[in-house]
Amino acid sequence: MIAIIPAYDDDPLDDAIMICQQYVDWMIAEIPIHYPNLDLVAFKSEHQYDDIHAKFPGDHIPPDGNLLLATKDNLRDVLR
Image (tube, rainbow, N blue to C red):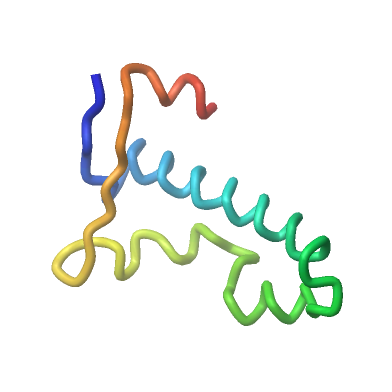
């Protein structure tokens, strides 16, 4: 069963951060392939990708934001 849950704290927030970190890791690995002239160190610093945890929960929670996580059965076991 698929469920949409708030990811404001505890395990759901940890899962959302982990998914974001996996995306950032993939993106950083792809940048040199597609943009070889881009200064990767400057790019990461400018977007604060060195510490993805520092961005959460931040503006991603009410009242200004809403961080939701879609889960399916035991997806958490697959992610870890």
